[in-house]
Amino acid sequence: MKTLKILLLLIAVSIMGCSDLEEEPVGLLAPEGFFQSTQDIQTAVNGSYTHAINEKFWGRKLSIALMLRSDMVDLASNETRRMEMNDLTTLGNNGMISEFWPKTYQGIAAANQAIAGAEFVAADEAIKNPVIAQARFIRAFYYFHLVRQFGDIPYLDQPVSDAAAAATIGKTPAAQVYENIIADLEYAKTWLPDTQPTRAIPSKGAASSYLALVYLTMAGNNDTAMFQRAFDEAEEVILNAGTYNFDLDSDFQNLFNANVIDGSVEPIFALDYNNFEAPNNAYDQIAPMTGIRGDDRNSGGGWSVAVPSLAVYTTWPADDYRRAVSMDDGASINGNLEPFTNFIASGHQFAKNQPYIAKYTRYPGPFARGNARATSHNYSMIRFAEVLLIAAEAGVEVGENQAAITYINRIRARARMGGTTEKDGVTVTVAPSAVPADISGTVTVNDVLEERRLELAFEGKRWYDIARRQIGATVFGASGLEGAKSDFSVTDYLMPLPADELDRNPNLLPQNPGY
Image (cartoon, rainbow, N blue to C red):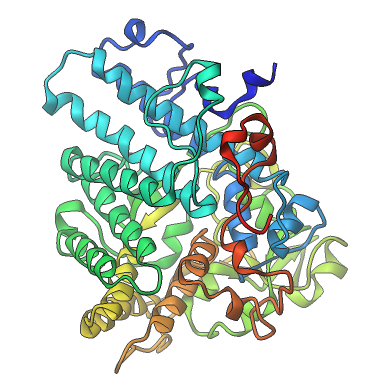
């Protein structure tokens, strides 16, 4: 019976379309019997997208794990699996890893089915290859998450259906995984169109943007050649932004408003929930996980699970419009407007007297259940502001200081514009301000990382920045935003491989160091 549970056989699931795409469930069929047209390839690709919006991937498990592992989000509950993530004491049997690891491989398996099935479709390259390019892009997307989380991992580029063969597959070195990711993204960049009807479908610019981020990640702290590749790739996106229809949104709040996000030009590749709801809670739950317990909004408020430390709020300049958008420092509770210092007394014993994450609770759009579950959010996996910051960071490393200044100041200028948001349940217009001021002089890596921390706050980016830059000893020290995390070790930059996978397949041994 164990062999039926091996992660490599997770292809034995139904395929359905992404929420903003065609939804067409199909059973598991022999590839030569199912794949007859490019639409059949697209159906399999859509199935791969769908795994990403599942509660076990971005809908809760992975997104919240990444928040908790950072230095910006604390834990207001006592579930062991979340405490391990927050305290960096994660074990191989962690209940979050055991959910998002197999879900990620399900997404990969669906992409592999699409790529393999394309061989049975007789169509011109110009028609077929752009669809294959979607499959290769989303496969790279999944592997990029895995390799950053776990290092050496099983790498599969074709369907596996034989249990005996699956049980013998071992780990692929991280360096080779990265090379495979680059190959997939280069193929995607070659064949994808400049624009797509929705940002939930990758474009040529999305492939190029991810290449820039991959190169930046591979550069670590000292690979000048890789920094140059990151800079060149990011600048290619920036210089062709008109062709790709990319730009900064004029109002930072729009990026987290499910009612208007479909019209924004800033998202480059997004996971579009669009009120998607599937069985077994397989939908978006980030809003309730980060929402204020007892809040009158969203049919009962949130669950008070992932809550920023107070220092995240107090060290963020008050006149920075991004703080107003990103954090709630007050709420209507039981009909009364309450400051964050009174959340526990006025709301619920499991609340926290701290400002909360507001990006996902204010404007969830139409949703199917209370507490803002099953939202209509589009979660930007990468957006134009991040490409500007990739170019800025890589520019610092390769001597392009003026470029770094230019790109950071574009983002700061948008923040100074203010906009329309919500405070204590009331729509307010935040006037333009002088904060944050333009940067000048010599830009440092720390300047860019700080800009990333604020601009991309609570978007699942900060942990990856900490790990790739190896700054854990500083940000998890006594002066860190959450205070000292005494259990932090350099081995925490990688998570442990799932213990049950190691039990089933000894070829995946050894476990990552430190676990």
